[in-house]
Length: 383
Image 1 (cartoon, one colour):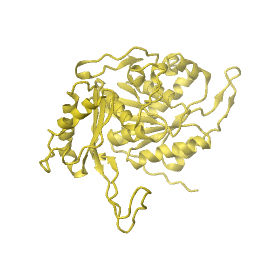
Image 2: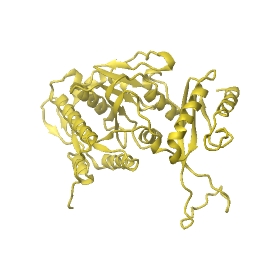
Image 3: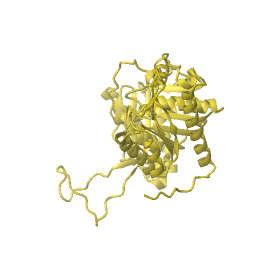
Image 4: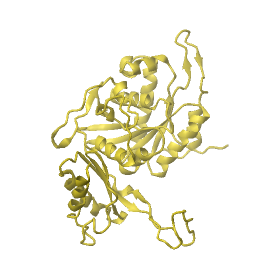
């Protein structure tokens, strides 16, 4: 975006008043650094948790004002709260760039109290993993299909901006239709409503975006899509615990998270990190799935525990979270995924589809129990 467009943003924001001070939000110092990438604009407005409801209208008016500017394609505005300054009893260590006695900038964090749901969507489930390569996306799409097979209205969002998988997994190549108000119409496959950044860019295009642009894209894919009425929206999260994960966890009212891991210790270490992240931001963990639990030879049918077996189950018991089931490592899962027709749609009566369906049923049961406030009692583990 050119400097002229950048200079046009602040005057527009200068017309938005802060109800508390009566000053505009720019003069009051409430607007963060504005991140711009082409026609995408992202910034935050600082407030306090006590004023979250009051400032929600300010956020909406700021977003609408910037969206009307020429050349602006998408706007992401987030309410943030400044963290409390360090206690005098626990002074922070000055960085090399900080002089003694100088006021240190306070970090900003998205406000948990400012979460807004997605219209028409009853529950949002995040499917996550602590690391890549554990079959998270394949599990997510078969989980979504399993939930749909049980009679639910289901959508799936590919939140992996850097490595979208749904276009290949569901053999979708067309671009979404743009409806009135720049709202995107999701694509459909096997009864699922589907959205991915991969529908908007070429498969070989690298996404060289920093955090604010990732947040902006995620916001658009989640909130500026005509999802319609859904019982469940499954979100295929990127691996790890970075910007995208924190954005979803802190800005979206997630009904729960499903953690995917393989059985070996190295994967379980990363799965623990992912689980701990959701717990720290008060997102309930619906359970753990052990993927690639055992290898089934396509020639003789013999099973071999290539990555061990039962590690995720043991971890779930140790951490006191539900174990949702295990999925074997089978060439049919790889083949159907590459063909764009996941196993639960390609071979619905197969044992492999039944394994995914069992995971979907267990996930739905956990979700229903939490909706009803019927949480399981804590498990006592004696070591």
